Length: 278
Image 1 (spheres, rainbow, N blue to C red):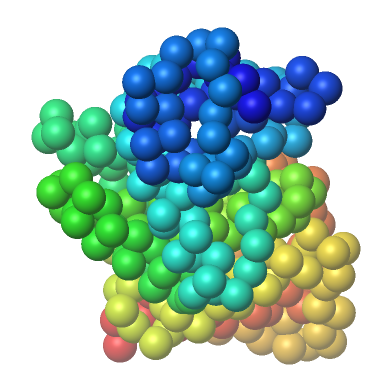
Image 2 (image 1 turned 180 degrees about the horizontal axis):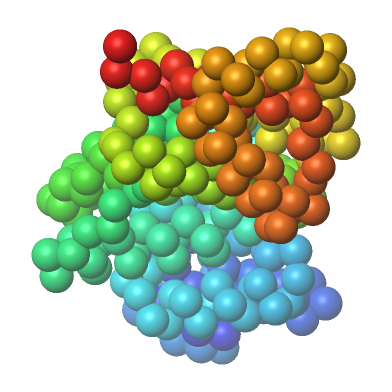
């Protein structure tokens, strides 16, 4: 393998078979090396061959803009996560997660932090990935001395989730997350209150929204209840009905989803519970 570019002593871009470009990592493999020289294959500990030439070029460009040690740190995190979660990841995760971690470290040094609006949902929906991501924060702190906030564990957990999936499943995950958060926002704004995220009723509501969203993606729905029950709930909880109508409109406009009366009954009951101060 002939060196095309040296990023640091441990990371280099080399020319592989059929003139392909490969990122290689190994302790001291590029020490005092220059472009055109060969790499000792016995020193290579990890290779990055992106699925497309475009991704390979993007990773190479990224390494020109960030400390290459951040790729080494990300590799350490991904190796740990793959073992801890008993899974394998697409090579694409190296580009996305390295970029995210490097930017998070830079923001932390500048005193900036991003709040993760979906942190609670991520903790509940993907507990294993979140727990693994909290360990990733410890690895980052050990390597850099920087203690990132728990919000970052949520972001990293989503990289673990998406890194195990193909493009279609990743898109579905993002749509479900968007749908759940959109409905929660409608309830919060309609009632003008902050929902108690630690309550059992909130947990039940979010769980229902999660499965409702996945059913929607699979074009499944709860059959309509008998009209009498629907009318009883509408009459008993008019405010919850008004809020549910906003949810129905949101789902129709944003996702082209028609909500059955059966789903509306569940929405009204959950909304009544989660907003009740009785």
